[in-house]
Image 1 (tube, helix red, strand yellow):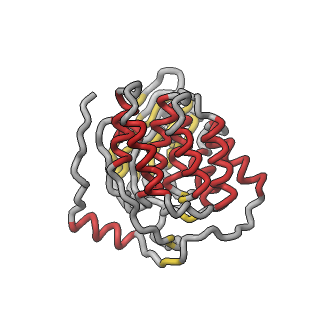
Image 2 (cartoon, helix red, strand yellow):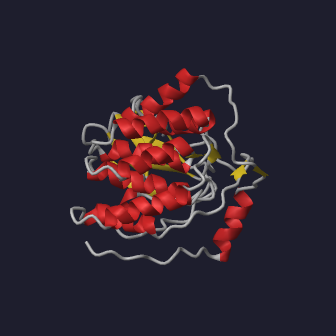
Image 3 (cartoon, rainbow, N blue to C red):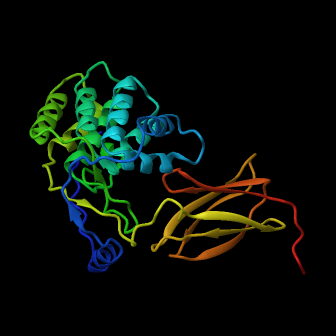
Length: 300
């Protein structure tokens, strides 16, 4: 795979206005703060992130990790180290997603250790590189697929994105350590393919300033997610509560109907789907909602 560095995404004026309008932000120091969350709750949330169970609760668990702050970072750091040999890309992606919501020193030191570990799986090391980039570039949006494809900067955060909070303090030399480890990986002749690309992407990042925002009314909270509900016959109503157009997929269990729709901001659409139970999924594969065909006849 050839390495290529894509230029930074330059948002249009309309995008910038949208982001500014939707994210009314106040700033406070980015230090770990106490929370009412118990350590047990934070560990349970981390287990949900790792296992993906219960189904459809991953996002809620990630938000809980964000609220747990230092305790959440410690729990995710332990999971990153524990699963350093894993090749489960879906699970590793969920662990990396925590770095989009929490900027935590223990979590990023764990990612440094895994990236620098030749005995760790390539998939876990790629996920660690993504986590480290998110540590250097607060509020960035980047996937492992973008990273290994040579897109080192990801994409502009959506206006409804939930901004990161601070957890355990970051090491003062974090950026230098990340660069040293990334260049060591790039210089390892046994490292090839996507891992080399990901490490090279990490090596070109500098640390960006981080100021922690206070959640404002413009944020989309967990309860406001796309949903699907049964109407009658084979008719289902899909709702998008977000203030932006959203890419959604629906799929009936047991090989029934499936499809994709781009649903405009705060709009609903009625679709005909054959199937006893239908799942609504976002573009990242996260389950949003389910609905069951109750067999009601539609009124004339």
